[in-house]
Image 1 (cartoon, helix red, strand yellow):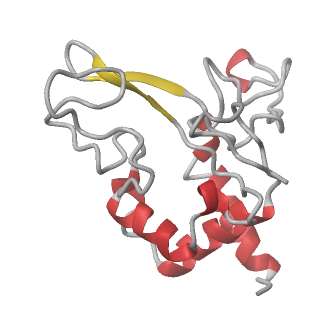
Image 2: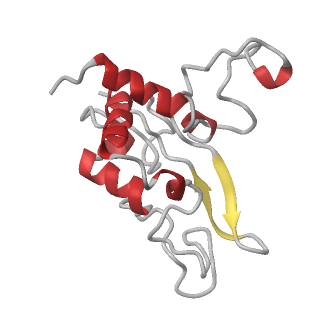
Amino acid sequence: MAFPTTTLGLGSYLVNGPGDCNACHNAGPGNNQFLPGGNPFFGQPKHINPATYLGGGRNFGQLGTPPSGANIISRNLTPDKTGLPSGGDTFEEFRQIMRTGVDFDHLHPTCPGVPDATCVPAPFNGNLLQVMPWPNFQNMTDNDLRAIYEYLRAIPCIEGPPAPDPLHHDCH
């Protein structure tokens, strides 16, 4: 199904403007979202780095005080070999993620006991995305979420870290 350019334009606006998705969904540290010499925080004209654009991999560290458990790492939002964004999510799955924060990948389950590098400590809920600001997006209209989804389908795939890393995308 082809979507009109107005849908893609709205999606681009929401992803690159108020959503500022690339600020987190790039492979930090620092402002790796910009090309060398293109970081506006350094007074330079802004130039986005296409090699990291929405490819995920930013490490937010561990949750809790003191920090413990698994490192939280942003996901790759670019389309995979299926042509679907965010690791092959259907629109219905994407909408549910944006509305409820559900983590279908279960990359950071809640620790059943002492936290280790594979889980997040209570009271954090490993069934929900803990860093993704989904509560800020949960009341968006279906039209807005569809526009974001279709825009993410239209951008180039970024493979991300090598397999078997769970954040790897197979582009081909």
